[in-house]
Every structure is written in structure tokens, then in C-alpha cells.
Image 1 (tube, helix red, strand yellow):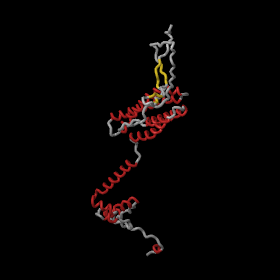
Image 2: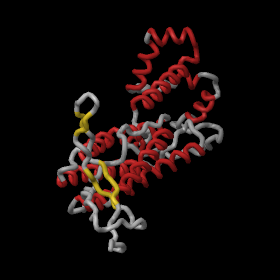
Image 3: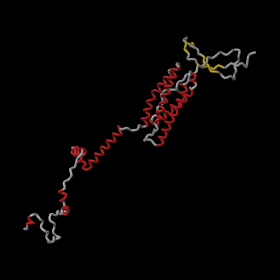
Image 4: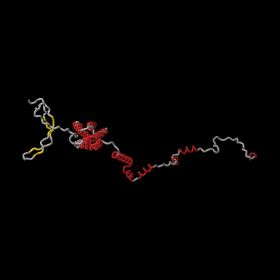
Length: 310
């Protein structure tokens, strides 16, 4: 070996040619080709691949507990694969039953009528009684009339606020009749409120007396239409037990005057109505006296000046 070689010089390159089929020294192994061959081997890749860990949440734990419970296993033994469907049906049925029984739902026509009637019927009847008991006290009577008016108006306002009086069990024609009767009843109630407004504005008994016939007519119509509307909704028509119209003061009749004996009565004259006191006592056969009734109105012919005795 020459001194140049010992000193570290690189020997000259060989003139021999490298074969094209020979792999270079230090070349990487064909890893991709080997992996492709291994992938073609059945079951080898899947056997070496480890499954990813599954994280079970709270729902999975609860479901597992239910499936391991004795009740679930007993039902599974009875119904097999239909057990989940049966459980779902039971839960659905329980939810619907709870909603119908305890959940919020719109009130029926019967519930609305009963609630409103209970609220206003007693105050209205109490005010009516107070009107009848205050005939001799004008101020107390006007106050009772105002209470009667307010109870009537409150009743009609609550009824008017309900727009649907239909019953699912009835036909469309029957529900239309019910709505018509309720509207007629409320309309009559508001008409009575207008008359009561005029009465409460009176300053003396004569201002109340002039509405006696109006009150009598409207009260009779009110009671009739109340019975019809209640019969349509509740199934039974109950009319008010208070007899007669609302009490109003009656005018005092003037006493009768004795006709002048010098004046002859005129047959064409209109008789005037007056009050004459009846006899206080009348003897009977046994000598006892009987008491007569209250003063009764009597008819006395009006005097006429057309015919005088000569």
C-alpha cells in the first residue's frame, strides 16, 4: 500500500459497473409493499388492530342498571324483544294521563258558567233583598239599587268575556243555539243595567217610581232568558226563586173628597182613583166586632158644573 493511501487518501473509483438489478447498499426496505401484502392476508390486520376504548356516559350506566334489574329481566323473559316497546307505551300512557288529570287545560262551558254564576248570583240576590227592605228610606234604597246594578253588570261582563260556549258532545246546531241564548241573556242584562243607571240617578222617590213598569218588564225577560241559557249549558233550567219584579216605591193615592150635594154628577166624566178608609169594625150576629182590611181604592165620580139645580 502506497504512502498516499496510508495518509487517508481515497482510493480511485473502480471501473467496474454496478448491475441494475442489484440493490444499493444501505437502501430502505420496501415497507409499503410488505404492508400491502399483509393487508391482503385475511384477519391479520384486524387481529393486530386494537379497538378504541368506549367511554360510557351516565345514560349508558343507567340503561345498564335498568337492564340488569330483576324487573327488566322478568319482563324480558315474558315479552322478549318487545320489552322496550312495552316500557315506552307505559311511559307514554302515564304522561298523557297526568296531563289530562293535572295539567293545565281550558275550562269547559259548564265550568265557566258555574264559576261566574257562583260569583255573582248571591251578591245580586242580597242587593235585591236590600232594595225590598228599604222602601221607607230613600238613601238606603238608592244604595241597594247601585249594588244590584253593579252585581248585574259584573255578571254580564264575565259572561261576555267567554267567547266559546260550545260543547264537544253536542252538534253544531245545538252549540249555535247555546251561543245565541247566552248572547240574548247578556243583552237583556245590559238593558237592565241602563235602566238601573237611570234609577240610581234619581233625586227623589218619584224619579224611581216612573221606571216601575220598565223594571217589571225587563226583570221578567231577564229571568226567562237566564233559564234558557242555563238549560243549554248545564242541562237544567233553574229560574230564580224570588217572586215578582224588583221592588219600587208606589205612588200614594189622594184621599177621596165628598161630592158637593148642590152639584149633579156628570155621566160622561172620567172617574178618578182615590183611597178611602174602610170601616174599622162591623158588628156581627154574635155582637162581636170584626176588623176590616187595609184601605182600598174607591171610585168617585168627578163633579161637573154643567148642570145646576134651579
